[in-house]
Length: 193
Image 1: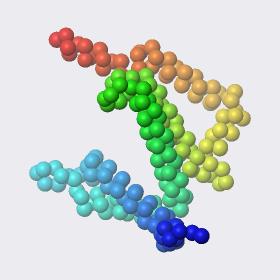
Image 2 (image 1 turned 120 degrees about the horizontal axis):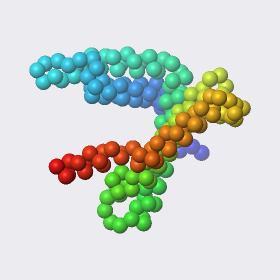
Image 3 (image 1 turned 90 degrees about the vertical axis):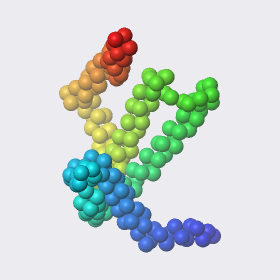
């Protein structure tokens, strides 16, 4: 027997909350925030405040275009829960790391840069896989198409060039001391002067 709460969720699903209202609000909120922060559509007054009315109207129209496209709404509906799952896995990992650390703030960026960058790269790969798996071309996802292409053409010039570029970039990062190597030298110069 289904609970009353499950029935309410089913009613909201039939009403279109998950297919229309929430994707609309999500796209509207994100786009409005980006337009407000970047002030792409201009500013008004002496305080240089963003044009809220124009930002809201553009966000509103684009959000309506997004919900009118079923494939985009389906992609958003499948991407967000998976990204949240990745976030929960990340938080669980950090909690497990925190068990073995001393008391205080767990600051991977300042105190454990290699672990931080490995973590960032894994998260970026995870998000890329989630996006590729959500986007479909016909009956196949872009992830399946990409994987099939790599497997079937592993000796092709395109795949070997990409692998070579990745190896070269990783070697350059390793040799130069990571992504923040130059900043450390600049900080030392500032401390000496």
